Image (tube, rainbow, N blue to C red; front, side, top):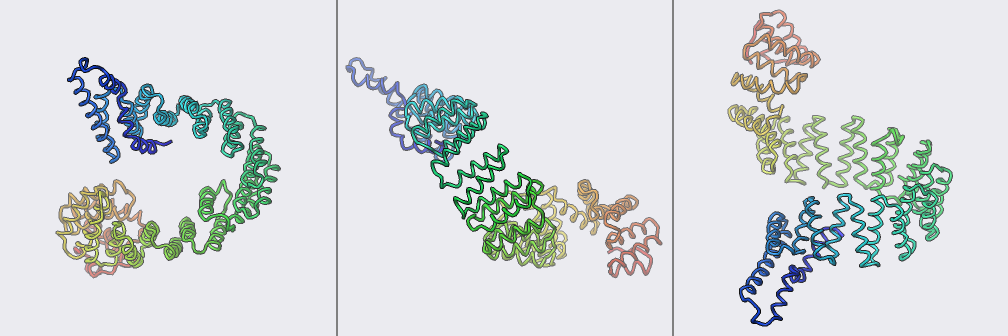
Length: 590
């Protein structure tokens, strides 16, 4: 019996518990009533009544707080109960249940042991203590408690069974088997008992007895295919593949429509090195309408997550998915399976198509929408990200991540006013997530900067990096924008330097750092970092090439500078300022 059940039973038994919460004091009260008035001290009687009233009040209040989930208040109140009556087993029990729920099993077991010593006939105390002993792997002590419970209620099969389980866990195989045998004498042939005994026999090396237990199940119910499967598995585990196959095939004789046997046969052939036949049986199982879709999907995940053990190849994986879609065309999870398979092979566009097909069948799965949006972002399909995020917002208006992804699309599509409004709306749904809040503000800062509201943008960027100091994108972009304006260059250098410490090979971040140094007039150091940026970018980025030319010009290497400006033009840079630099052989600020 679990702790929750015990809790509710106690609430039902409250009147009885209150009347018995102080065994010794109730006896005293009865003696006072019977005795002659001349022998009774009225002050003592009043004190006794006051204590009982105080105890009852504290106990009821404790149960209320416990029911409300206020465990600390309940503990304080129950501790007060024990000050009033140190021998209240009921208060000890309630206190023990709280400690057990808080995983303080030591305190719980000490309280229960004392409660049982005071009230040895209360089975609920014993059941909870047995549960705690089991939880703390004190199986032998748990078995003793169940044994005492069996003595009181010999017909209670749950107690008998738990006693046998605890004996088994404590390594007392013979005693456990004896306990199971006694149960079997009362209930007859029972699957749960037979399987438990079979496992114990295997553990103890009594293989013949293990076979006899399964044979007993078959003889008792020869039309149950599961028992033939147990026998087949047992033969297979003992290395007898001939008899194992015989019993697997027996399942098909007994239950021709049993699709699960195909998976047992698939495992049999795989263990015996016949991967081809194993896959054929697997396909039969996937085609069976007798097997539910969840079982098929679980098996699919097992097979494809470890192809070295399962022997499943990429082409065979595709075949299984095709079978699933053929047999279950209206099951949206099948499309998600194909999407995951495509993503593993780097086919993001095709995977997104499958996810969108899944959403046509089940559009209320938020995680699917989020997966689509992330793929849109990875593909840099800003129109798709914008459209899909709008649809997701209609379905999940309280999910801040959807607003954030829509804001990214708005920035990329240069819808800056809409970006600001989307950020402000999305922030209303962010709860206790400074990182996400900082990322929202970063997008707002980007939009404000592009709208020409430089001062406002920098104020928002300050808030963004304060909330999320490790947001490298915000740090990099803010530093770059500061360098373009020539403001707070020392601050820009600190932020950009922090980024390249973390990403020393990222060309974009190296370019930002070099450009900040360029703006500070540190041209030699700027050249070093810009050369690193060019090395990591493949020497074909027009922005980096132009910046490198600018640095070379400041180092009085005009001819080399012009060469890099011309390279920048060849790779796609076509600004008027660049043309002027080349034409007039001079550097001009943007």
